[in-house]
Length: 201
Image (cartoon, rainbow, N blue to C red):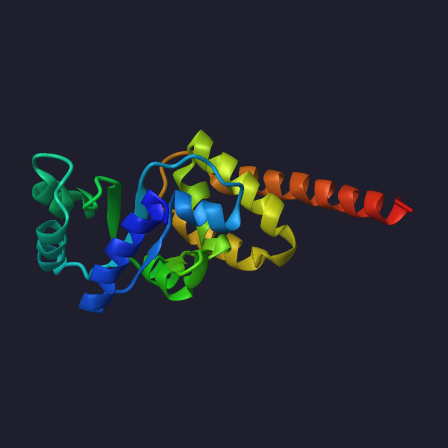
């Protein structure tokens, strides 16, 4: 078992023992749905009701040491727990509470990363929404990779619907036009590849 998967398994064991709902939303989820890339941490979305953050944060930090000196205060203020697995692998645990975040966790499914290692990740559609909303260069690269691998299977209506709601929370550029551009470019490549395949004897 590689280090990232081992760290993710360690976190998931705790989450399950507490009856917490969760999913992986970062680089490991990209490995499942998109083009694998180097990642050095494990990103989780963990459902924690607003107003009940303290008990969840305290439980997490009782099991996993914080990566910053004020990890508890930072987590309570920002709803993100920055900690390490026992192996030292960084864990970024975002405390989910908004309806979309709850739906992301509800739509998440297990995936076997290695023999005997099954982890729960966000869906391809939700990962695209999260990446497009974040909008960094690496995020858009991940979006392209997911589109390339999953294009024929994506629920585009779901993606547009969820991202339309989220964009109202943004102060930056609307991500939908760029996402549509990537979709059209991917559709063109997929169709071209299909046509060439049909012509090959």
